[in-house]
View (cartoon, rainbow over the protein chains, first blue to last red):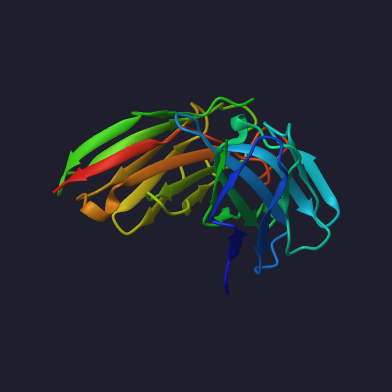
Length: 116
Length: 114
């Protein structure tokens, strides 16, 4: 099993450019989410999905779009990159917590994005 | 936005010593409390998911306790080793949500001094 795979590992963008961060998982997890990590702050939730076709906003969704057309994939799109989006991005997945099962998150290896 | 607080922010511990740190969370509408270990240049890895008041979980030299009535969890490391150096994160879902929407603390950065 590959687990959660994120690409690319590193990316440099100019202000105004767009790009897509890819995330795929092979564990048949229902839940997938995107977090960003900034110095001095905890991981902050950008968007999440509880299943194919269902997405919702987290704490810091502005400037990002997501879609979940399959169970496996959950790409994160930056529409028009800004320096404030310079961060490390983590994709995570887990089984659903319904039925009293509390599954931990499985994280990808992260994408370090710099916007100049 | 939930307030999940971790203390201390950072900690230096001599190899072989034991240590502990705290995660505080809102005690109302408790659902679950997660602990993660995050080594530099790697991704966070789950240690424990705790759900019951009084719960105690153990993995090797690391253990955790949970008090949902007063809203705190302790993480203990017994006989610290250099490989324990990492940031330890706790996380908690908001009311009526599960692990799809966790709020993370800023972590306790642990450095083991050989």
